[in-house]
Length: 266
Image (cartoon, rainbow, N blue to C red; front, side, top):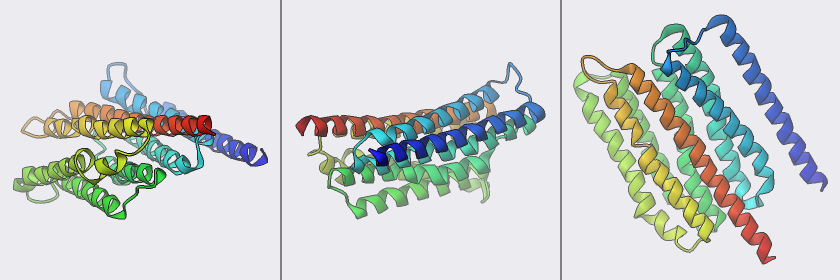
């Protein structure tokens, strides 16, 4: 009981710290940046920032209500949205002050959060005793290739003629991740898991399939002689909210369902 109270107190302290940081950031925005009422890109940045913080607080608090084997997965879910929230506070301010797309910071965020997301599949398999280190490195490696190729294509750091070939490499890496989840080793290992875990695994794979498809659409918006950077940033912000928040919610769902099932059996 004492350990439970200590965990709950620690969570509340962390939540309070995040809230104070958020308040400080909002104060700075009020003094230095003004969000115009017709700035839909700015609105999408604000909504994404709020959703990431709310999700982080939720995942931290709910971590105390799941079985021990799911706590690491809940921690990673909180890290994904927490890191994204921190980066979005900067990206939002960058947009308000300059009107430019925060490309570098966005890819820094993805370079941290995307590998964490794909590692969740490994953690879920580990929770049911069917983890594979090989699968983890396959998914992790493919996610890094996808991000590096995407950044080089979108930033045009290399020859402009390589933009679409690099984009194609990134898409192929994403399709490989999708294949591994729907038809590869991961599908075989999760087939023996509980009903709740199987549902969550498939839902998370669905998010990576449908939700991540938004990113290539956003990329295409930023190409050509007259790139639509407003549409690009709105799409990226929507995709981040869906993919990070909903993804974490599926982890929470699996954890709570499995915990309840285990409790009822006892």
